[in-house]
Length: 192
Image (tube, rainbow, N blue to C red; front, side):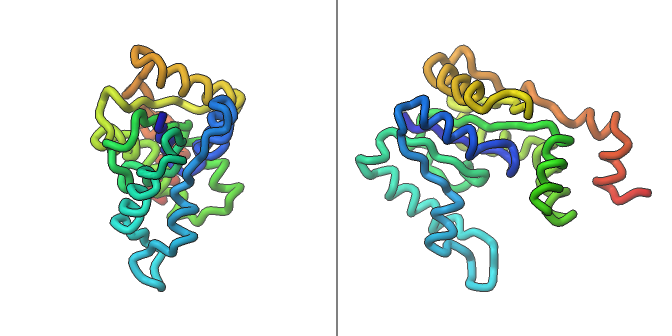
């Protein structure tokens, strides 16, 4: 069992992955961000741009180890650094942009980082890239809501893993938000 949990920063990947691990008898979690930081997998020492090739190669080695026969792999760049043949199921967590904006404000993200991440969520960039990488049969989306316990989403991932007919993709669409919410339009286009 190798489950990938991805999505825009702030959607709840780590919290839900921890609950998922508990429900699956404590199977290990590979946190892609921790791998990158602990190994300094950046393009250069003065850059925060991730070296995707080094990260891909390290994850490929790790996933060949027996202790990671069953594993949860978590990270927003999962579609760019994983060999799809070494995974079984990919779930992309989605969250309403207004909820994400509140989370980014709490995390004190810069305006540019906030805008980039919100636009990525609205456009479904990680979902699209996960679909390309892992394939339609092995990819699903789940909309995460702040008033629902993470355990519920973890159980939903298990249910989708075990029953492919429960997998949904392409249902979440945030584009109408830009049309209906003047505050979002102002935020994205720096209009007063």
